[in-house]
Image 1 (cartoon, rainbow over the protein chains, first blue to last red):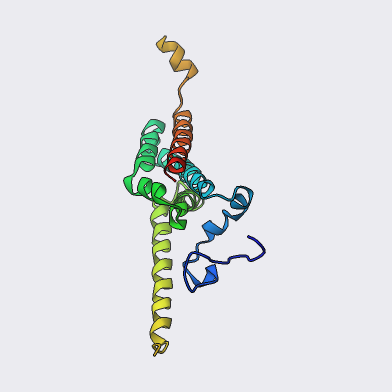
Image 2 (image 1 turned 135 degrees about the vertical axis):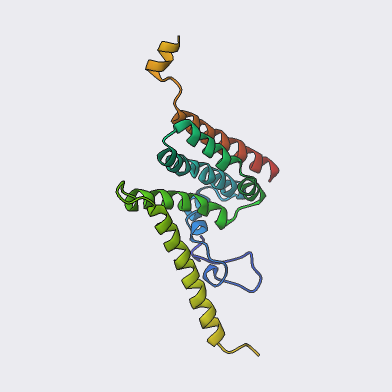
Length: 151
Length: 36
């Protein structure tokens, strides 16, 4: 915005979003915010994004259970989940927006890696995800440990 | 009447889910905007 992309104004002493808690999902909101520059816009977009996350949840549950109405129950659980509701009502957070990516990603992974002849593909995909997160954390900690402490 | 519902399948779970999503988006948006 204003010709200074990724400029950060909410953290004292930090000028660039990449040198803070960078969340790409928040950057994706920039065009919408440019059209209607108001905090209310961001809250509305967050609510819409969280609501859209219900669709992949429904598809996942429907394919796993084979019962559309039971899957609709899962959607109710997702939409009324207290932690998600509280996060949505509290303020705008990048982490709240990631729910839909996780839901949709898991659904996509299930479609691609879970053919009928290979049951349990979702376990492999979830395991891969956990392994990737752990590997990146380990690599970060290793780099941090090898760096000299600031004096 | 039961036959009518069985054949037409008037209320589908998909539409209920879409309705819940719309309700959630509108209600929570309005609530957040008002709170702000």
